[in-house]
Image: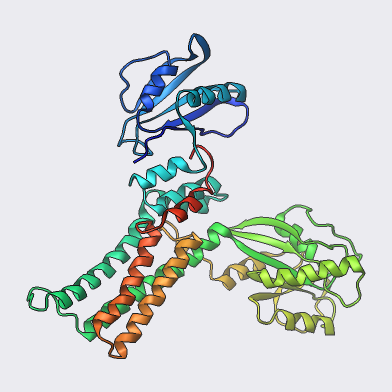
Length: 443
């Protein structure tokens, strides 16, 4: 499919003991013979020792791993040079490959070739990037499931059900005299579509958890000045990231931190205290806080439990009433005077276990229910699956309105196309370019 040879550094571009330079493409072994002292007949999955030479000059002593098509990552002939890890040496070896006809690979081009050569599907391709960027054990596990094809198998089972329904409908339309085909009546079509809708809805329910594990939840800590927002942030992070003083208005900017709550990544935002009287700099921070509340997936609305509820507290309750939020009563160690229901904590005594449980309950997170199973985590996949679900719901609606099955089949085909796009079976080249541009060089 590709006539050119590509080359790139596969290890990080920094000084180290070793570096790996990856080369792939038709006739790449001819290039290898021009630069490598060991000019044997290269076999697949073998390791060769020798010297990289520019004519008579020795650049480095190396080990070369060879892979023959189709039994390689890209599906092409390819090899990897393990050389010493100084960047000067690396650059000279890559320059030598370029001198002999290779071109520098673009971001993700090796993975793109693997996809276009049908070595992997698009879910598996994107999982490689997810694996590299994973920041937790749970996130890495989900990427492994996708990389091994388990997530693709899950989507393929859904696709097969839709294809089976489409095939039966089209046989009924095109070959009505064919007795062996099941007649797709309104009742049969409705039952099958409802079954597929049920499967799709379950996948989306699980995908919500998968996306939370991968991307995390943006959690805003909101409240009046000096109610303990920065103390709560520091307690959650187990470090002093935000300044804590008795002076109101200390936090003027959004402070970010990340914690892992049993596999759930929480992106914590400590906002400036919201109050009516504030200086010009604080007012900017307060406006940022309001913007953060709008963007947050979950708001922790913090109150000073040792003080009665006041008018500004009531305004904050109104401000967050339409947001997913938890009311948190702090300073319980000083005695409770506030009359409001909420999760009771003390940042002074570090007693916040019930808040951590409340967060998981609020967002419906229980990783034990989803362990050891693949889930969609990518927003592109989830968006396409949601679109397929809408197509299926529209098809079911049309059936109930007695619209002819051949017309209903249009919506079912639209659902199938969206499912195919998840796997990359019908995706356009410009989208491929956009997806693979997010990868590292050498992948």
